Length: 219
Image 1 (tube, rainbow, N blue to C red):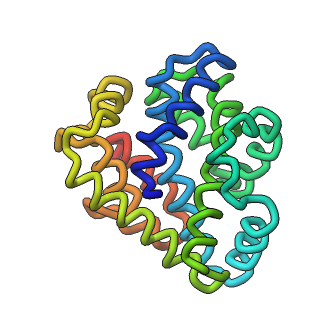
Image 2: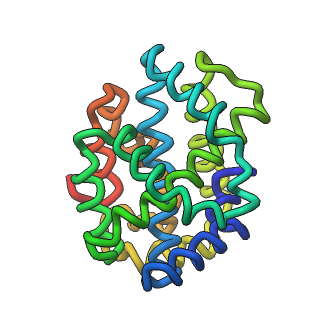
């Protein structure tokens, strides 16, 4: 399953409906948040995995807790929300509050709900990575390439699917930012995360603010 398929397929829709029912947030806002947060988490994990110790820790966590079964049984998400909060704290570290503020401002989801919703989505994102890891038979040393490949493949697919319905959702929810200038918001998000348009600083490991700036036109 490609990243785009995750975001636009049955799994993404089921998760969005669950979160809509639980938090009273519109399904489109949830889908937009998932479309921004997923590549952001993957990008940050890719940067962290350049460190051998971090790569080993991520590899162990994926083997132990994230086999991908959650993609077929999204009812697990409710029970794993606390775990999701821990995942986000590890992924974003001291930047977690900044990420939540930016995502809240740009999706219109209130700051008191953005954290719990992201915590609900985090195990799904990890489950997706875990399933890709299994299918590609990748160990700790190959995680960076795997994660980069997921993002690169998604960008290629997004470029080919200009009329993807997710673009309409992103345009209406995130609207107005510089990132929408190409008329293909999903591709713009992926380009920002991958370091397009001069956003190379994230390669240095401390550039989460640069990624967010690229996504939301804040630079």
